[in-house]
Length: 86
Image (cartoon, rainbow, N blue to C red; front, side):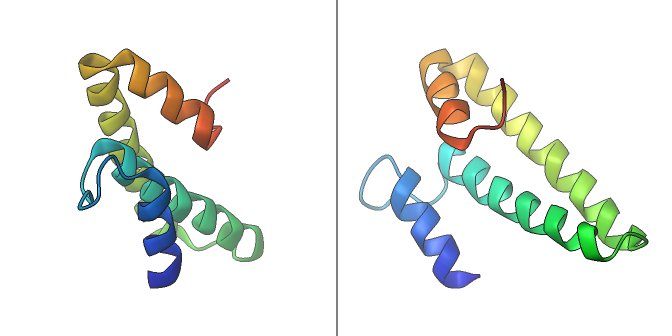
């Protein structure tokens, strides 16, 4: 997971030392959400992990709302790159 996280940070960072911008955080959350969705295809009754998935989705939603308020251009480019909205 650490290697995947480093690759995600390299792809979505805004400058050379960026690890905490909304774009990076949302992309990391999206990768974790996709991983958990694959987990639920196998383990349908894992309700503890389902709760953590819901928490992650809500965190991502709040960050996306923040980004949309601050910069609509960055928001639209991010959701197109991540393919999370229509």
